[in-house]
Length: 262
Image (tube, rainbow, N blue to C red; front, top):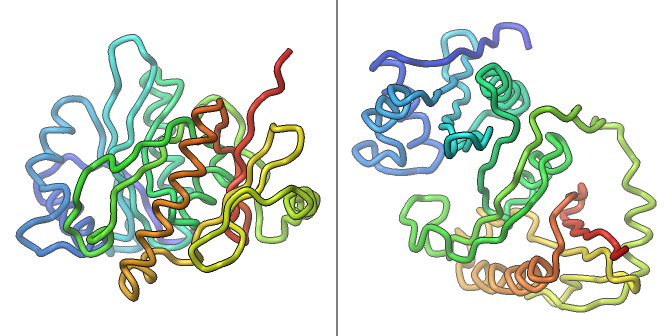
């Protein structure tokens, strides 16, 4: 990535720029960014880190993280956003910082209906969805989440594990797609199509999400909310039975898996 640099940010002006960037991403008024500069400054002062990606002089991505409970060896990533093509480098910089200070795992949450984020987190980074949180934040009034319920999926990333093989020419998902399409249907989606399938062995569940939920929320908030509640039903049932989210296909299907009883 010629011309791209990633560094930690400590100065007031730099943190102000990161705060404004997050406001643009989440479409909030300039006077009410989701992460005010003074909050980011306190986070850094407490031992956390704010990383910023610059493409030349232009701010093109940022993330912020803090350490978890003493002795946990865990870092919690509060927020991350980046332009296409920069997310992996930004997250790897955050990973290197955390490993350098003794962390072994990193957790964060994201909207499980956002398929591109699910694929990045599960397929590209190799994190695992370990917890489903219903309406985690309560009502949100930014321009991306407004009008919806704020369910979130917690992912846990083993910072010491090698990353999964991943690339635009990767077609390893074909066998999994055949398995999915052969599995019995358990739920139908608000658009009338199949929402979820479960294999006969009871070890895999597949669940579909909308192609672009952000666009759907803007065009039809009521339909987006129906998708939210339909996917919630599948996830809460599966997670209650010991499943975890381990994959996301290119066509918008989660794979939830659990180990066989021994």
